[in-house]
Length: 170
Image: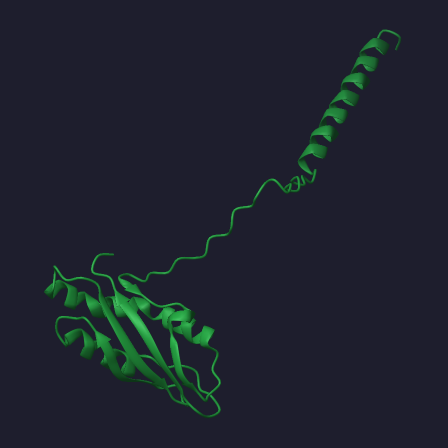
């Protein structure tokens, strides 16, 4: 037994070192790393808003829309969000016009629309346009009246004047 004592002692030392090494590596694996707090000097970048496809259509912001009547009490911000969501469809409407008129400039249309209590949107008239022919105007009116439908309200109507810009080059 005395001959084996140095071997037994070295085995215990090596085993203790292996256990110590194993536990110290596990401590690093399960350690929670807390990032340092940003100082006042460092500015955090603003989060990017998700971009949606708008194509050649530029919808106006809330300040550019003229509310003629709002007896339904609708929130104008929500209407602007709704109109912004419809820009991709308007892009495809303008495509044949810009194929026909390749050298034309941007087209601006002032659309006067009414949202009734059932949410139906009627395009009363297009008060202003600098389009070279009436095809885009007629197509836009039919598209708005057929496809666009807003939320219902208790009663009343909302009448808006919305300027829409179609870019010739996008």
